[in-house]
Length: 146
View 1 (cartoon, rainbow, N blue to C red):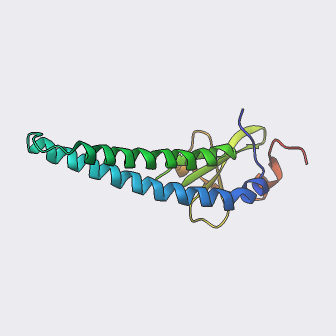
View 2 (tube, one colour; view 1 turned 90 degrees about the vertical axis):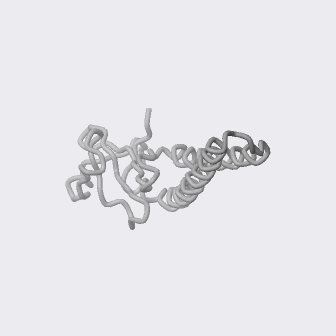
View 3 (cartoon, rainbow, N blue to C red; view 1 turned 180 degrees about the vertical axis):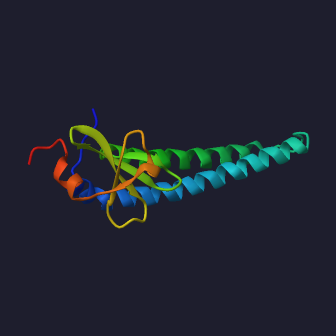
């Protein structure tokens, strides 16, 4: 069962979420670069008929890539452990479940935005973002009793 946030609860987590997302984005880039270098090396070896394989080099490259992947997984897990959902790692898109008029919807935040200003239904996604207005503020709730 997901945790449901009020807007204030979700915004209070933004400093932690932003730090973890910054780490995750940097690790995502580093992982993509490490994977690209490994694939380039393997492709070069294939082109040369496999005659000049430095197994230690390939093993080191795989270990480096896998180490970054593990750190990336830890960064994403830290965000999920807060009750948030990573929706798009490449753009830094995070959702916070909330209840609006009794239905589950998502507060939507993108890395770099100053605060949470939008929400959307479960099936609408980023393109269906709506501004948080007075009606939303009066009719949304989290799951914690204050």
